[in-house]
Length: 166
Image (cartoon, rainbow, N blue to C red; front, side, top):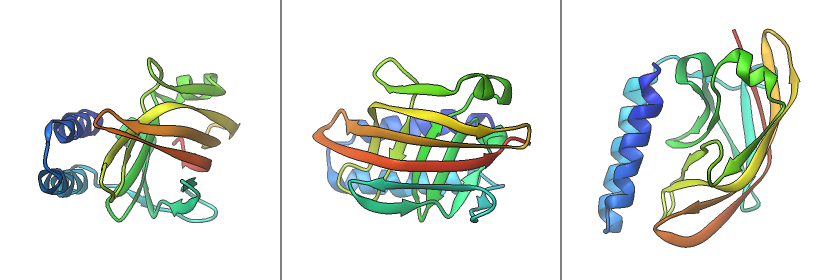
């Protein structure tokens, strides 16, 4: 499962090489299929279990499934083919760092949406671990998303997550 981030990174890099919007949409569909095939074990979200929520340019977004960080090597929330993926290295390192900066030269954030840009990364932002023990971690996140093929940016605010560390 440690290959999943590498597979995603490779496939998502291909999106930036596509010039046509139709090609990008076909590629996005392919990415969704590869993710589903290579990510068995996604856990349904719930109020007392795994969750990830945020606002994307002011609109509510909520994950319906989260891949456990120890399987994905990321904190990856998914809803109907859209996903937000935050950095996670291992339990020890994750718990040692209470705050992580995102953006150029910092921890990688990936976001895939059903829009005309499709693939986004963090231009700037942060993730803060607000509560953690040996079993669960909770935190907040926010970032400004961008894409090298577009001048658009997107504000991701009020992000919260909870994941199992077991």
